[in-house]
Image 1 (cartoon, each protein chain N blue to C red):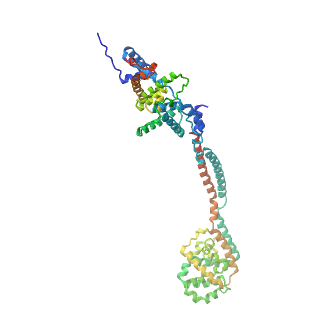
Image 2 (image 1 turned 180 degrees about the vertical axis):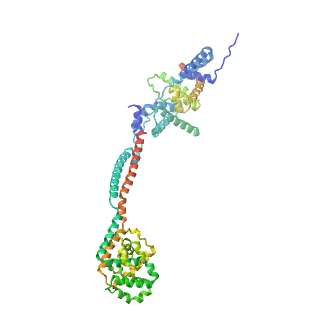
Length: 345
Length: 197
């Protein structure tokens, strides 16, 4: 009598049987297992026990939920997303922003092209100044010569301060040139002693000519306009020849740019002081009408040159439009792209 | 309305559409929770928490099998509840043998059939409760809920091979448990030891 050894199925065999029960073996594995089942009754018995177990578990009765698990709409209403996250808001703002950006860029382009075709504010100012000087030339050559000599003295006050006697001599000549019939020379002679004691008083004699401008006209610009007058009307060469007043006046270059004369800051400050002193001194002098007219004609031109900022700011307007338009366009396109991405997700 | 449209509406904030999905799947979700936990009240609470969590994370659903996604959520909710019960063991005021707490789907059974159904349910649940958590989950999903291996792997987040081995071991344990139940099972469901030759 032969006893057939009973082979206990391994865990791998149990797994094969389990998968076989679920019909999840491929054809080759299934064929192999079925051959073994036919040859091994123990394995077949284990398969039957597993099949019965699965049948019992599958027979577990389904339970009815004790209640409904629906959510209360009033309680579980999702929070409304912020308005700025809304896709519709992004689309609206992006579209409107894009249109506005295109309009801005178009307006900026038109303004830019217009500004390029029109003369600049600086050139307009430079053209205005020589016109005043030309008018002055037509009015009186002597007046222009006096202004030129005065400007020379104003532009180079350092030399005058260095040599008071020379300046005083120049002032007598200038006063005689500018106003031979006035009491300016008398006034200078009468106050000569006092003028020699202090430099500002002496220099007041030097600038007797510009000080003939009426106080009402000069007072607001008494400090600043001296270099402003000299800048647009007098070429740099005039600064070098302090003696040739008439020739310097004749050399007034109508088209000389204001930047051609760059006075040292110290010189400008001293000139302003001299102009102020002269204004105080001339209160007792007779004002030549022609010089006053010249000064009033020149000052507005100087003011135009001194205040080009508004024009320059106006020149920047097209660029501001363009930059704002481009920035708005980028922002709007970003919003549109973001809304598109959100709609895709 | 198809399931995908309901999901999109629910994702856009329509609670009513989500409630339609709840009514569709609440039976499966509750049965899984009950089989995993073994207590009807706690299973009901876990089911409710699972649906609330599903609604809160609905935006993270990127398509695919919605039922499997829902089952994964309820599985996590049940595991959280089981861990909580292990940390703080409590005695339920409800009688575990109180059959009134459990209602079966079929209500047309005769009293005798209902008694047999209760007995079968109690034995099966006891045997499931005796399984390790990982084996219990795959056994419920495979043999009670009827999912295939791939779905089980997706819900349990394990590999296909792991699913197979866990199911095999769970079935061996269940076989031993049911054989030991003997007289507790209805006669037609008894697993005789003679089945193992």
